Image 1 (cartoon, rainbow, N blue to C red):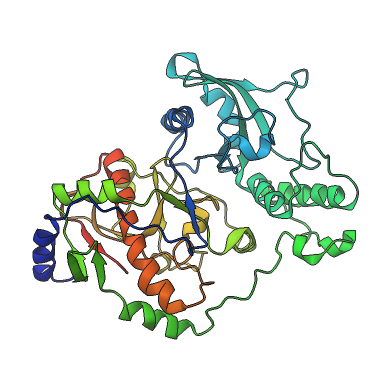
Image 2 (cartoon, rainbow, N blue to C red; image 1 turned 60 degrees about the vertical axis):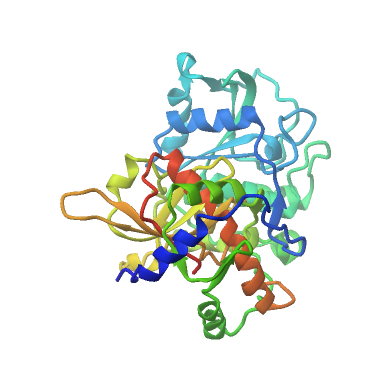
Length: 418
């Protein structure tokens, strides 16, 4: 049921007097925040044009380089510094070249042929493909990977395998190839063996594809949820205090967008936990159908209910059904899988409603995302909840900007903390 809005309307009126003179303070102790001025102009343009040409409702992703400090692949590791296109399956991966051979649409990419030469030698077991050509006026390489192939990239990044200048050889190379073969079988729908174990190759168990994540600080789950509930009140800047929620008008929306933290947030649980989530899908024999970029078109196909969302570095919003919407026992969507482990601008939940005879609209928005929000490794959980969550509210401006980019109305959206 929708909360009563009387008190929120008063808060909204008070918030309109806020000035943008004081920006939100950056907290250096936050292990999940990365100072990030934004993607280079060419990269922003490339992501936008690729998203225009790929079906936004069919599981295609455009991800930026794994290495945030490099603009273009040059003498650096190509796998870490190249734009990534994630396709939902093998058929979708094979069709990418045809979709993106459009010289008049800002894209002209073709398959890298064996006779062509990459600037660097690729690591053993690398399962993806490279396209070359022009996007938004730049001559670049683009990786194309299925979801399973991208799992190898995430594993290799964590395991420090993707070294170009020092080619990996020996046991690690053999294990890398074994993981590639296992994930290829998963990709084809025919996994006949269990995941290969690093110990079988004389390697440390921490190199396992499903290596166990470190023990969390939070062990009392119900106590932690109670702590969140007790801290639903938040303060915006220094002028509005003890706010449970508000309905922003146009001036306040503009202020929130201007004041949004200029950072990206890392996946709190890291690549190891993300691999386990992918493994849940595999064990449930679920195909990766993908989750849509929110646009004025895709939102009309979503049924009313609660969704998790992320906003990526380029300002695009992805959504997936929250756990309570999935009554079939299938693995629920999570912020980590929505972003494929990439850092995000903001993550949380939104609620869609639909009046009779009308399409869905955004009713509520919050920043309740455990995977990208609560660090779970802070020295003080109280500090984590009370301080970091207040700061994270500043990132709401990125969510509002993403809705504007998608041409989705932002009026009468109830903004909440948790």
